Image (cartoon, rainbow, N blue to C red; front, side, top):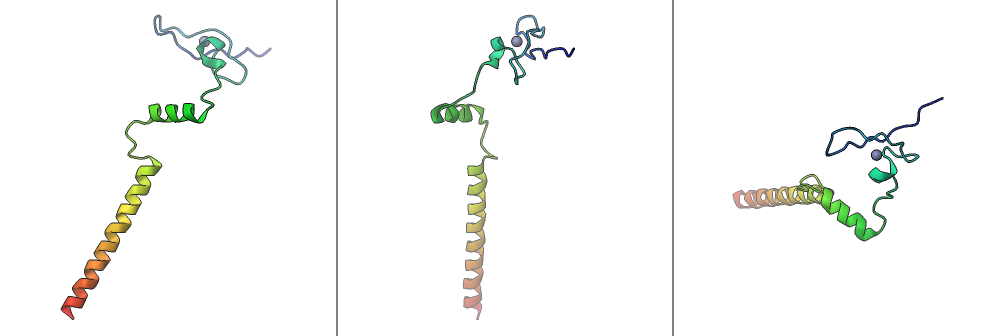
Length: 89
Ligand SMILES: [Zn+2]
């Protein structure tokens, strides 16, 4: 007979691992959040997203902004080169 999986949570006080059985399909027991379904509403998901964000340097918004800035710089460089060519000719 297979042994049932045990909770992976660790006690903050004693440092020992919880020995309860897990909720089916989860890594932890019902005491340690096995019954949790996670954030459901859009407001709740947004709150979690904000809590998990550390600095946002690699967020999709920041990456898109960098790409736009690079395009802008490239356009400015091309424009300056065109003006320079017109002045020299
Ligand atoms: Zn547990």
